Image 1 (cartoon, chains in turn red, green):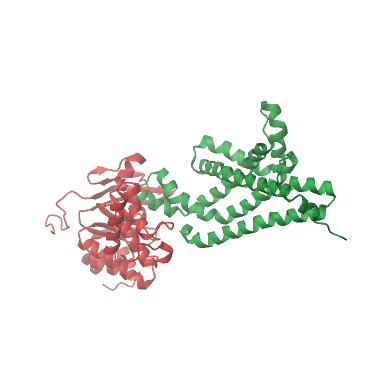
Image 2: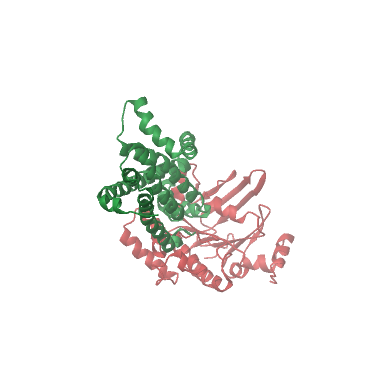
Length: 258
Length: 221
């Protein structure tokens, strides 16, 4: 499906998410300084770059957990609405996965996955629970539905969190450093679930420091520095032949040898 | 020194009546103060600005004024101001509820504020409304987190019912005073009263603690 027009997957179709000169300030600090980018249908776009470069903030501007101060975010052809009530409807179509999982500790794994459809979409509880069980099986946790988060490892909690986001049938999944809080031995199980999602054609925006994941799974890489996208391209280009000096130094700091 | 416990044996029905009223007043106060306190706490944390100021003033006042003063005012001054006289039991229930609910609201507020912002972010990202987030995500966790402090407050509440004796509510303390005075047996009667309070309170505090240990993980995010 590589488009010869733009060199990007589904580049000939309207993007799922488009950022037009997004600006975000916290007080006097400018965190995003005019970011423009697009995410096409079925693409895995990885956001890489040093801490504090604005990657996570752009992700939060995507589903309006943070409201951009300038520019605009366009989702499926519509700029993000202004009112909280309208934004809630948009957020339901975007799944989000957090660094610290943020499972709801008072609910079992199954309830965590089912709570969105039941509470927000008014789904039939029995159907929602059956679907939640299927999603837990999909992330390899079919036997853990009755466990509370406190009885799950970090990797298991993050997989439940992915299932929770998928339960809303999102059009795009946003991952905010999903493996940064994990023990090394459980990172792989989360990345495998994400890789499988990508293979199924899920549109994904991933903030990550896992360069090998970005290299193997991403279709497109955005390199952030000081609130800007300083370089973008397919992984082969970014990792093997980065043109920007800051990209080169960032990658070499991570011990990336191409 | 000779001890004579016969006044207690002779008047055990009278004392048990007092004990039952102590329990009734305690349970009624706990239920009412918990409901009012939850409403106050939610109002202070999530209510509109114009509501927060008077609620905060109310809570601060109740924390600053001795419960005995509130009780005496409710029983003796309130009827003069409003023309409505409350029977002693109801005056005690009202005064204790006014007082204890302020503390319930503070405990709930602390519990709600202690939940990390990521929980709200996760619920918002799913598409929940503010009311859904409070009801489904924050309130249940806050309730678990407030259990230890709430358990202490339960003991304080049960103990505080003893001051209802000053407005002649026939609860355990009042009945004990009567028997002690009639028989001049303060050591025997008041020791028995102490023991009775202890026997009610000890299991309550233990039970809350044991319950908290079982559910603490449900509030840990």
